[in-house]
Structure formats: C-alpha cells, structure tokens
Image 1 (tube, rainbow, N blue to C red):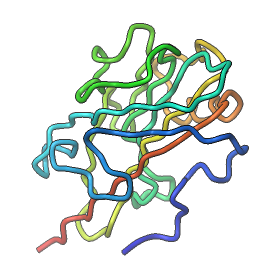
Image 2: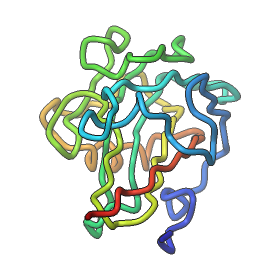
Image 3: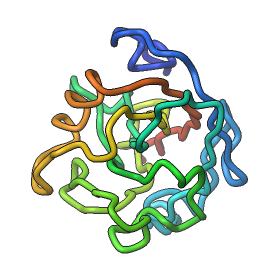
Image 4: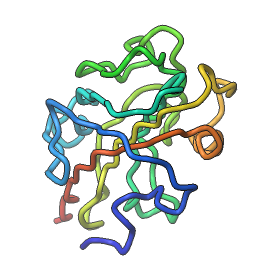
Length: 179
C-alpha cells in the first residue's frame, strides 16, 4: 500500500532548481533490481551507478543520499549519506557506495544501521511498497564541515542551507508478505 508521502520527500525544503539524475542500473519510477537490495532478500548491498548533470555554475561539491520515506519509523530510513564529493565528479560507478569506494575527500556518514556505506532496500514484511529516493545535491561549498560520526540528519540540516540545486531518481521495492 502506498503512503501519502510526496514523491520528493524534500519538497518542503527551501526551493532549489532541479538537476538531472540518471543511472545505468535504475529506472526512475521502476522496481529496484535485485543486486542493489539487501543480502537478506537476495541482493548484495551494491550501490547503483549514478550520474548527474545540469547543475549550476558555482557548484563546489555534491552530496548524495538514499532515503526510504515509507519506512515504518515515523521519520523514514536513510540508506546512504555522502557529502563533500568533489565538484569535478559527476558520476559514481556501480559499487562505489562503500567508504573506500568514494572519491578522495568524500565523507560517508553512518546510515540508519550505523554502517558507512550504501545499504540496499529490505522493507519489513507486510509494510507495503517502499520508495527509495536517490537524491543528488549541488552544494555551494567544497566541504561541509560535519564530524564523521554524526548522522545523516546533520547532513540534511547543512544541505538545507547550502544546496544550489537538487535532483532525484526514485525506485521501489514491495515488502515480502509474511507467511
């Protein structure tokens, strides 16, 4: 069952121009393929390939998050949060979502299971269809000064004030019905 959450969970934020986000591995609005899911449901915690373009002049770095607004937590679930991606990087290869797979200078924050990497979708049984929003932010500073042990919430707070443009690609996974 789909929740009454807007497609863009950041729609309430200060408006920002759009940028284009594409992937060789994901199709916007389609099911997230198995390799990019949690190993418990046949995946591999492999991050999908992502590319972005159409960001404004003055972009000094990028940040990427992957968020499940439909998680039964009341606040969603953050699967991946990376800041300080250099401005000359406009794509990530499949599998780059590990702490040591990101470009030099990037900061991968602990996600909601406290891992410093991409964690694939695994919606709880019976919780319906979940959306996974891969969001790319064009940032106006080269480095967001965030302590490495803080949460993606702190990144989101900083992005609220430093985002020049943002774009997203959203996929979905249906939960496995128990029994």
